[in-house]
Amino acid sequence: MTIHGHLEKLYGLPAFTFPGPEDESELPEPDAVAWRVTSDVYDADEEWEAAFARFCSAVDTTRVRALIVGAWQEAYDSDPSGVIDALLAARDRLPALRALFLGDIVMEECEISWINQTDVTPLPAGFPALEEFAVRGGTGLRFPALRHEALRSLTMETGGLPVDVVRGVGASDLPALEHLDLWLGTSWYGADSEAADLEPILSGARLPRLRHLALRNSEIQDEVAAAVASAPVVARLDVLDLSMGTLGDDGAAALLGGQPLTHLKKLDLHHNYISEPLRQRIRETLEPAGVEVDLDQDDADFDKDDDGTVHRYVAVGE
Image 1 (cartoon, rainbow, N blue to C red):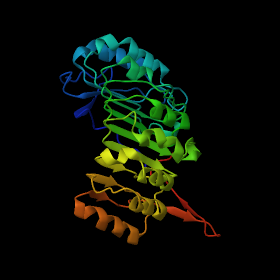
Image 2: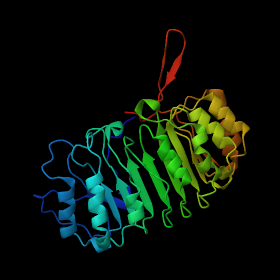
Image 3: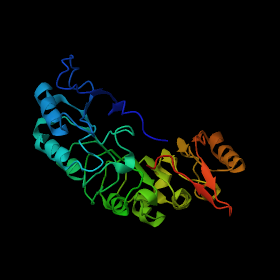
C-alpha cells in the first residue's frame, strides 16, 4: 500500500487547498474547512513560506481551526524548519487553531520514507490550545518529551519511526490525549525500536484519558502484540489497532492468551498474516461480545526463500 490521496478532512472539517497565486476562485469561510497550504517538491514556482504568507493575507486567520501543511520544496532533501518557523511566527494570528497536520505529501510527490522531518515539538509547544497534531515522514524526525495540556490526538505516519521518537512520546505528559497512532515501520527505513521501548506508553501512566491506541505498520508486530496482551492501558481502551504490519499466528495467539479484549468496541488487525483457524478463534472470542473485528488480510504479501525463510511486508514502507 502507498499513500496516493491527500487528506480529505481534519478536525471534522473538509480539506480545501488554498489556491495558487493565479487562481482567483472564491474562498470558503475561514472556519468552515481545513486549509491545505502547499508548494511543490520539485521545481517549486512558489515556496511554501510564500504561499503561507499569501494565505495569511487572504484569509481571516483568527477564525482558522485546522491547517494542513502540504508539500514544501525539496522535501526529499530539506526538512520543514522554515515551515515551522513561519507557523510559529504567525501563532498570534491563529488563536483558533486546534488541528495541525505536518506533511500531507503523497507518493507521487515524495515517498513517505524520503520525507525529511526535524524536531516537531515546537509546534505543539507553540500552540498550547492545539487538540490534534499529526506528522508524516520519519527521516530526521525528533520528538523530545514534552507536556501539553490540551492535545487529544497525536499521529505519526512513517515507514520507520526512530526509537528516540518512541521514547519521547512515552516520556511525554499528555493528560488530555485520547487517540495515539504510531506507524512503527521497518528497520530498512529507520525503525530501531523494540517492544520494550513501548512500555511507558503501554503502562498508560502519563496517558490517563487514552481510549484509541494504534501501534501499527510494524515489522515486529508479533512482539508488539505480545507486549500489548498484558499491558495495563488496554483495559481502558475502546479501540486497539495493530494493523498494517506483519502480525501472524504468534501475535494472534498472544492476544488470545492475554487479558480479555471483550470490552473493546473495535480490534483492528487488517493487513495480517494470521492463519484462518486463528482468525476464526478471534472472531468467535470477540464478536459475540459486540467487538467489531477487522481481520481483512488486504494485500498482505510475502516472499519465500529457497531455504523456506518467509519475508513478510508492512503495508507502508517506502
